[in-house]
Length: 294
Image (cartoon, rainbow, N blue to C red; front, side, top):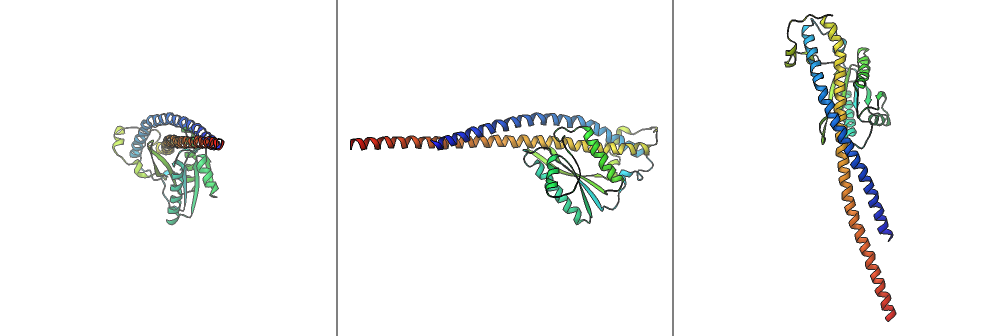
């Protein structure tokens, strides 16, 4: 009887766990839909921002004097890892951390003397500190629903480090949302801003014409470049948020499926144990009857 009760207790425990994972899957699915809607709403703004920058750059006499465009020998680099504040999201956080460690090894092999660590998300910050990395700054509490102000805070800090020559390069690593089943790790050099970003292409056609700039185009562009960094970081944060919800939804769906299979297996084991107990009781009754008649 004890074996049947133990198995029954495990079945109840797994059923309760399945209720939790199912609820978390539904919550992640709802948040994923909202995150996708935010990405779609942000894209027109990002496209218009790019058009404005390209048009202003074309009107500028020179863009080489702008601080965020200055390239120099990379002796100190900063790695910005975008992770989540919570776990239970499959390989979402682990694949980011694996990639940033690979980036660190590559940078050092290329002659970078010092690597500085910046991280968004509680999971990334705790892992880096556990491995005794010196985390220069961490931003937490908004991985599932980032606001533009969060991107502004990060952009201000990395721009400050770059313009003060605290670092010579800033690389951001994040999960790009492909689908709820697929999140692709992306590595992007965000500072210095590549001059290729300002080259005329099909986006610039909307701003072709005779414009009068006040103040000068160079001054306008100098103000636009930090906004471009903010926009790129905000887009990366939104992609990371959608990837996190997609990974969590998939992980919880797999957990619910595994729980259902475990319940079936335990139910079969409980039925077999109950059948064995019944058979044992019948044998004991028969043996007792034989003893009395004998």
